[in-house]
Image (cartoon, rainbow, N blue to C red; front, side):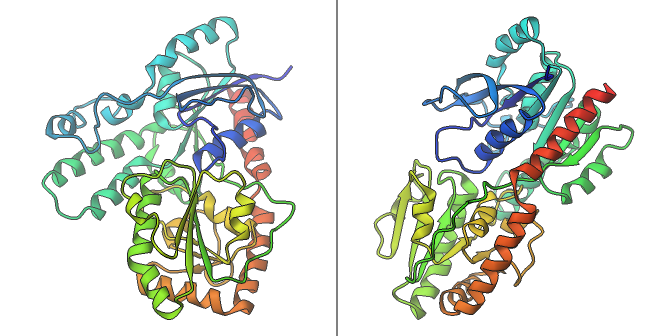
Length: 403
């Protein structure tokens, strides 16, 4: 009989279409079910829950939970509370969905799991509070890194010094995760170096479980029209920032040389207020919550990933390569994928360079086809969820063997 594995996630793998972290949860549950009997338990249920998730034998959730206080960008009192000495940073503590505890206690009594896969540290802390064994903390992103980037991007502001102090406290907490949990997972190999530096004195299991992609069996043909495509969850702040940056600073440079060019922005809604002024502009089309991503890619000649904020790995880069679209990306968006500049994609970080790269791919079909061929080959070899699943199964099996 397969060992029982509890998968805890604060990001439910619904509703469709799935993006980013939703895909990681959905596909890892499916992959882990090859070797384990998986129960999926989610916080922040947005509604419209499906009756079944592939790989999950049991499915449970609680409604969307909003922390009572924001320990990240809150006022002085909230910021200072994040500096108090504690084993768990107040930001993490505020995110722990304690409404799930009764469900966990009942599961522990009736069908105790042999191990727990917890997506994000606050979900791992929830499992620890419930007294569950063999917790795998799927860190995905080190939040202190994300905080640091966001603080730097905001420039000088009144509470910057307090926020930097709070960020330092979060860094100290994340550097002690190896002392709190027996197994740690990151999504990109660069983060292993941070773990090796941070968990001296403890010996947790550590591995990379990269993000992957559902490899399409058929690649839809590229349009001949000069159409650029951005795909991503529309109300995720790094995506909103990327869309605004591209429209405000890059697209005008492209239109100055190629007036017939247009941009498609596709992703699950809602459209956040910061993007609503761009809807209806000439040359810009929003595809909100499309039913079929293949239909969206059919309209695109070039894919763009101008993401500048956040951390982790961007599944949208893998998806575009798998769908046979040449890609222009920032270094931040490509981080963690080991794709090579000018071999698998064009890289650019400044508006003029990004516009120039887009124009090159819209005009130079030989270059575009070379990138498409190399990018598809790379994704087929390195970007499948099966490869990620093998790493996840191996880690949990090793954890149970050594427990």
